[in-house]
Image (cartoon, rainbow, N blue to C red; front, side, top):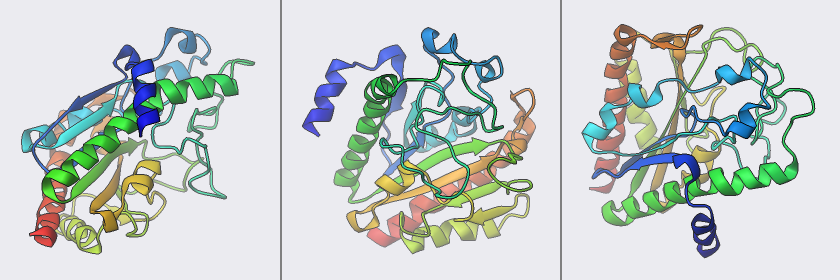
Amino acid sequence: MRGLQQLCRLFPNPMNNFDFQQGCLPLLVSMPHSGLALPKDLEQKLSNEAKLLPDTDWHIPQLYNFVSDMGASVIKANFSRFVIDQNRPPDNVRLYPGLAGTDLCPLQLFSGKSLYLAGEQPTQQEVCQRLTTYWQPYHHKLGCELERIRKLHGYAILYDAHSIRSVVPRLFEGQLPDLNVGTVHTKSCSPTILEAVVQQLKTQNSYTYVVDDRFVGGYITRHYGQPKKDIHAVQMELSQINYMDEDTFTYIPERANELKKVLRTIVSALLSSANRIYS
């Protein structure tokens, strides 16, 4: 931890690479893929299609703006996942062996096309620099906030908020379910907490859902979710068709507001179920 703090002092949050708001609840909402910023030297190396940032978790801060009002802490990356992927392990080990995936510093778009112009892929030195400059400060803050919450409340809940285009043939067959809950097969959170989420999903009939299917949770859920240490993590991967135009990346309030109602009940269920466990 001391070494990481020293690194954070050496590289003091360039281009405001994340925003953080501290809340009063035992809940931290992480938004690692919602950022749009690109360093200029990187932008010049990207293909024209990549410069549109198609693989962004579009509008996630707007979709979840209610969590701050509820009192949750929120951390969100401001830079694009094309700089470095906060939800991948620092050693770039594959999260889904045998299946298509993405790298710590992605080389391909979700479509399978090259992210970079010919000969412009990052060197290992560049990857290490991005890891130090962008990845480590975000995770340092995330880990410190979870520990603060756990010490204050006796437990902490981490909700990792994501979204993705509804149809991505390279990653999965057919159309993705509307709501995809990941708990690493209940390794990242208490079964009681997961059951509370599932019960909320069962009470609505507007959206399809699956639990621990194609998306069981990325690095953030797997690494920080430690129920035995009273830290419970849940990943939610949303199908973007339910709140935006997937071709123009335009937010559609009418769709989003309906989805927000369900998301709010899920977040509330996380809190109330954990409170029952620890009361």
